[in-house]
Length: 414
Image (cartoon, rainbow, N blue to C red):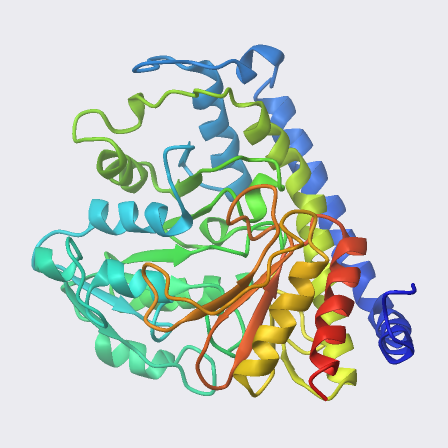
């Protein structure tokens, strides 16, 4: 591997060796999830005609309707809405919130401050046109304690009138641990004991197929996420999803389209094959990304950096946080990763402002699908503790090479 220094190659070999016991756990989960998907596809009799395109209103689009049923079963939910018309995970999450909340209702985030783009949807951290705040939704947060949900504080804050709690499964731009499926289930059970009518809404981005169940199978009322993250298996060209209780999913559908139309319309302009095939590939591709994250944790720990999760930690999402300490190292990391991307390898990432973010963001991602974070990418806000958040990797081999490239570029700083 002539492109890399002897030091990087030596650390890579040690990191691979240290990671091997944890790879076996990931492979077992991938096999179980692949079997689960195959059984669901068989149940719903997936056939070639489900892949056809539709136009206009697309009434009775058999492929679209079957895709919804399949994803509902994958999530252990009553109903699902899988649409290429969702432009991002944030869009899907926003449709849920605007679908279930009404003026005067109260929403509480019980996992601290939500992801940056969700803060603009809510409108409390940074005012934005058309936010929940402008529609009179009352919002508050329960801060995490030592990186975990503080159920004592949650009990103090949830009232009989609280309409919904927002539970963010993944870490966002923070060094806290993601929530495991077991923890999500425990949180939902406790919330229901406090207020049985309170809706448990889980932001499931980055978590799909990392475990053998999704949050709706353990008590969440509704979840949402992006199809250019884990569920699309690197093949879905765009889109997102909502899954959960049928009434709540339909309320979200009425915000995506219009009241009275809901989930009945939505053309599959390019056909549905890549969505179906993406779900089939997703357990394997997600496992490749998780193995890449495990390797990254081992690799950068050996270089002396703080990583989260640690090598020994059980994974609940595909993200690997690496605390680098300076803006210069963040930029170098992203430039090194970009250099070993299949697309735009010639580009040099620079920090810049982005819609929905309060700080300048540095991003690396030479992806086939623009913005896809199941493909190897990294990003982070230029703010303390100057951490980059590495995610994705369609193949483990690419993740290893990209991580070595990021390290090599940082070593040039001295």
